[in-house]
Amino acid sequence: MKNNKEILNEFGEILITNVFDPSYEIINNPIATFQNTDGYKNLFNNLSKDGKKEFDNIIFERMHGALFNFLKIFEENDQFKLVYEENGEQINLVEISEMLKSEIYHENGWIARFSKELNK
Image: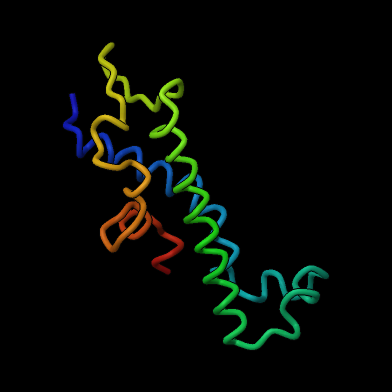
């Protein structure tokens, strides 16, 4: 059986690479990918570089907040469980983390360590 840290890291990597990165990818796509779409023209044509950077920050904070609130559900509602299972043994991720919702935060959090999009 994996140790608690390995279990949390595995879940964190899956969460970030399968939820955060695909959603955040739009921020890092080359402008040429979107520049001829109506949505891009309506949103970005009148936006300065500073405005684009601020937009990027807002998107990051909202996604960060959504993941935080998602994980908070498992901490504050005992009827919902986030369980790792191996060889019939079950480990509740809330019980092995000091604060599951905070695993995504800080410089060594899941986003900082596992996001391929954020680190482009």
